[in-house]
Length: 175
Image (cartoon, rainbow, N blue to C red; front, top):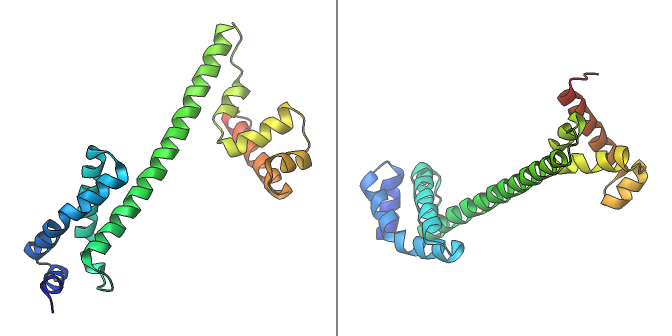
């Protein structure tokens, strides 16, 4: 049994010193990977820290089918993917909020009243908002919407139903 294998076995039994030694031994490799992945020193440091915490929490699940460093890199990769997804969701949400505020400002600037229905519509997620707009504002049929959005007719019907329920709820018009 090699030194790394002994350290892993001890760490899995709860030996904090062995776990610390394993993490310290792999820190440089993990940091270099995170730095190349994020291209940002601060984000790389955060990623390494989160990876180390996750490794500490999950050391008992480590199976020696791969090297410990490979396991750490896999954890780091999954964390980076999760962060990227979260960042994209946040950016998309922020962009929609900015656009909603801009549209509201533009409307108010023209001395027009901000209709409650338009406010309720702006609160819908885009995949619900789009079919509702196409159907009830622009007058397209459900079949045309399905073709335009390249989705099934049943999906259009479902999104219209959900979208309208959410708008009614927002406006206080319960069925």
